[in-house]
Amino acid sequence: MNGPHLDEPVMRHARREFVRVRASGDVEQALRDARQTAEGARFLYFYVLDDSDRLVGVVPTRDLLLSDPKTSITELMLTPVVSVPESATLMDACEFFLLHRLLALPVVDSEGRIIGVVDVEAYADEMNELSRFDAEREGAEDFFQLIGVRLAEVRRASAGAAFLARFPWLLCNVAGGIAAALVAGQFQGVLDRVVAVALFIPVVLAIAESVSIQSLTLTLQAHHSLSRVRPRRVLQALTHEAPVGALLGIGCAVTLAAVVGVWRGDGPLAICLLLSVFVTVLLATSLGVLVPMTLQALRTDPKIASGPIVLTATDLVTLATYLTLAAWLL
Image 1 (cartoon, rainbow, N blue to C red):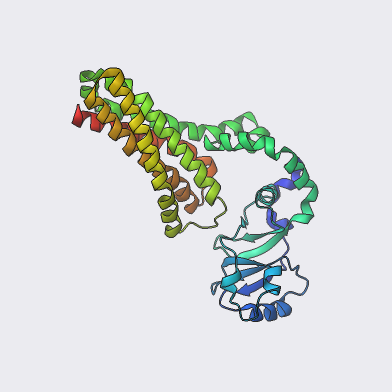
Image 2 (cartoon, rainbow, N blue to C red):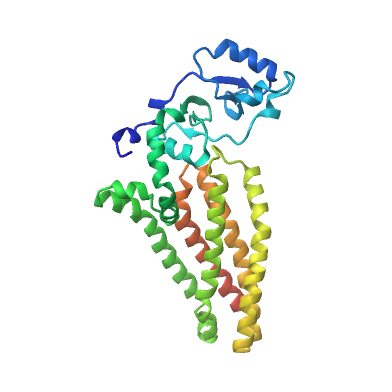
């Protein structure tokens, strides 16, 4: 598994012969086209292209052969398509095979056009080796990537390269901490006047950070295979997470406000915390969805960059919201 070939470009190992069918056609047309164009190609999947030759779907061979000839391709095709970019390495392709359990993976260019196909059976040894370590590695890999480190790269890197891989995202946290201090400085008056406000800053931040990381993790798991991010997909993700965020916000806000009300007997502070936690949890949920999908739309690896950005943004938004409400209510 540690051989240099795993770092080679995936296109060096991709085959150029594969079956293309048109999304506008039906099964009969697809089979006719396949007979004309698929000489030498393996019939694992039929790859569906739109009028601009972009990959929009995939049809398993069995589904196509067993369907009525007049069935439209759009009724049979599976979306979204799991694909790898042409810039990927063979290691990336092997990890995709392990994750999605596919027999072949299409390779696409920057415009989403299929330019090759990688077969799983060609890399059985690498797959077995990766699979052996996959379970024990998964938890550590996810954790390190969420804080801005690609674990596999750092393990193989020199001290200087490891520093360059990790330091930029730590700068994000440093900048966020300085910005948070500046935000708090704008509310020095309320902090001096009501000391209890400062007492609960760590609690409010901890709740919001936890929710944002939960949303971020779920978003990465649900949308990591998308080749492109569309506004409709972002709206669907937000619509799915918003009710959960609202319920989490209500639960955390009511619990904290009740504890503060009983413990300190401070009604205004309890109301301030109630509103602050509810609002910031909703905002944190949105950030956990929007940041990774925005990074993916910008073709930046969301698994590496999202964690530091989400945490920094969550801290700033939470602190500003909490102290603003405290200044108004207390």
